[in-house]
Length: 605
View 1 (cartoon, helix red, strand yellow):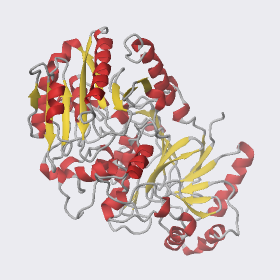
View 2: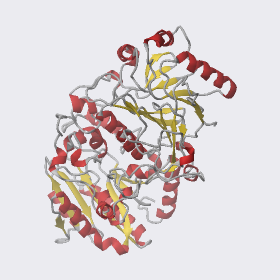
View 3: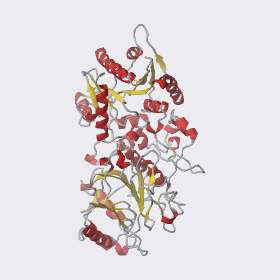
View 4: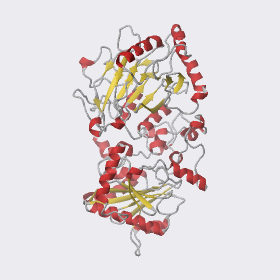
């Protein structure tokens, strides 16, 4: 299939007649194009242009192709956008734009959506703490960060860095750029928007588009930290600018989701290093993009800040929840975050409860919201459990099941490769029925589970590796999965010490269970297990089990086990599964390769 063809435009300033006349001409001579994306100030900058603008909004003049814009500022903006927000056709939560009129869509706040197969993310409006119409808030910033952590690469990022009445690009964008290629007057990035710079460094889009500076600038592509693809920055001038700077630009990128690994990693000869410092690093004399050696060492073992300050709401933000923490279990701002890091709310969010409902006690998205608007607790009815099974990623009856990752199915358990694996052959053992843990089911279930475990151990023994098993059990219940990660035999002896070190950093000590009276550590754990309490445990290669009962108000990270093993293997950058996401084609190939090797050990062959 042909790649999508997209037109990009800078500040429109209400000059819709001039813009769409040019778009129609380009579309006729070089098109057809699929869409027009506008950044910067879209609305008029003077009352004289309002009549022309309203002619398009009210349908008296026609818009030639689907047009999406960010930015809420300008003459007539409040009236037009408020009317669109109240329009019944725009009821619910729409990341792909609120319809203003035929072929015109407002991208409100922040979001990510698919456009002709391309993943498009955006940050719209002015920075604000007052929540006025069209302005983005810290919640929008957090939401965009969380959306960007979903599997896959963002193809296009649109930003409107209108910060405190300064029209600037993200800070640092000209760092490391070739001086000869920079238009005059843009080398000084003082006063630029650090929020957008941080977002871009985290999201790592293939194209970053910005306006508001009145200058056209196509920066050389630059490499990203911890990513194989490059980013291209495009700054666009305003429509009808007196210097005749370029305000319309065409691109035709193949969606990253349909590209091979080799295609996505191609780097042009003029590629530079990243203009941004590493996320979380302060601006000082260090080489941008490099991490402090001490932080590298520490992050290999444990990167969660467990200060109790981190879990309290910050000054001036009341009781608002941190979207980043709820969605991923961690937040880069740590104890400096102004929003609440609440583990109980995170569990509810993981069980499908609406973020707005948790944060505000209500949801304004209407019937189109696909999340739950009630707290999910124990004592669910059969109908509720059935409904949860349909929503669950791991239930065999669920339409959301990633069935291509399944490698073996037994009577009570099945085995699947992990999505976003830490290492090759990272496996999950999962109950077929919707069960919150692997310790409560009957004894005969455990017999089958142990057969799976022994088969996985033998498979890795042949490759001179040992296996560590671990499970996080929340009393609020999700679908259980026992994770199995291989480690080199030479490092297996360090597993107990590194888990103990991580536990100390979180302020607890593991209870060690060993074989006793012919019962192994797991059997002892089953006998002691209380389903009314949350639990994390690790099964070590020597048969010992480390367990920790998690208290009600204890902030225990859901990714604890993976984080620790990532530290042992010096793979701190792979601790979050989203950083290891593969395409569906790559996942299928991974499962086929594993099946061919595991076949002789498969207990269900």
